[in-house]
Length: 289
Image (cartoon, rainbow, N blue to C red; front, side, top):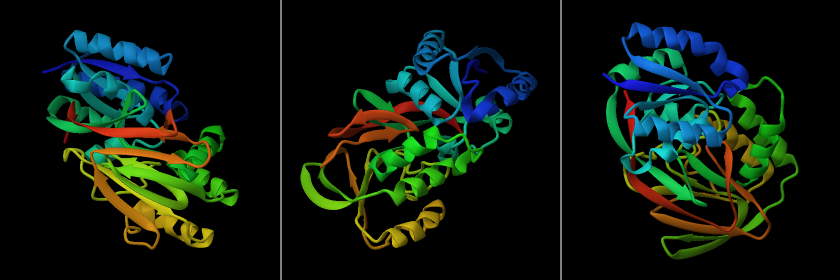
């Protein structure tokens, strides 16, 4: 039996987390769990709440999107505490990768009866992340997705990619993968921990959370029409093997472009290029099915 600190971002999912919170509280009570609820005012406040939960020996249950979950996970690094995931945002990609699904009420069962497992984190720019760090066309797409007020749910990231593609011109990339340098012209560089991002886009379908390795995705320049045709395939994970796409594995990756880009991870800006990403093996304890 765990004591739980339920850390909620009320604005996650355009208010979805706030709307579902009463049902989540009722479910936790029904499962006999002892818990308290803390509503976040900012990401830094969420980190502060997580540190307090860990110090008290409570499970830190993140109810929000991947940004909140990633911030909570970063404070629990190196086994400082245990994470539970109650998906309340738009993307919920880390919950999807763990097999938790998108319903935070149903996910309460895993707080009560889930198995604790160790998973990897990735570190960049002095911060850690759970999913995929990417830059290039993905940077522009994230900017579009963050600015839109259209009620698109998880499809907001695909919408951002389509809008960004219209104005895109290729960048020249220099990538060091475990010390081996590659140079190419193309759309993006992505460094994956979980392999899933953008509201269910399975960029690296076979990525594992517990292998001590990162999956590095290099997207070379191809015609925009072909790139556009590949976007639906990414949601199914059937794009692997398409011309111009290369997936490498490494413990450390350094990359830069010929123009400025912000690298995003878990839906938030995390570093300016050039950036170095390293795997942090088995650093996070999480409750999962």
